[in-house]
Length: 98
Image (cartoon, rainbow, N blue to C red; front, top):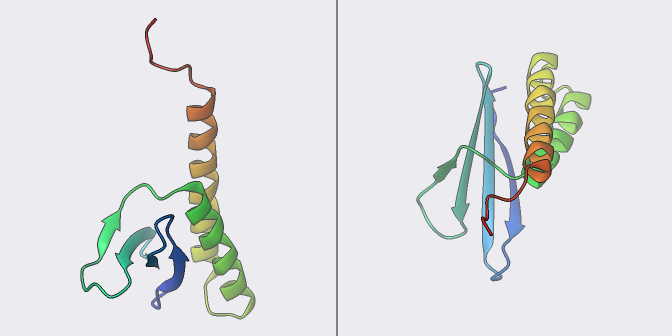
């Protein structure tokens, strides 16, 4: 897929942030920037909510024939891995020593 997927979100402090995800060559690149700034920040571990949003947007694009089945499969697989990682972290005991 050549066109990046973009959406906006509002942070807790009230500022708007743009999310841009590029899916190409079996890679997913996440970039974020505060609205009004020029600098994009690449993120290697987006949140589970970001993965949920991306999967839904990718499914929508696939239905409109704007994304390939390979790209949808890649995002679906990575989404599942991210969910598994969150579950693993949630079940891990706290490292705080008493």
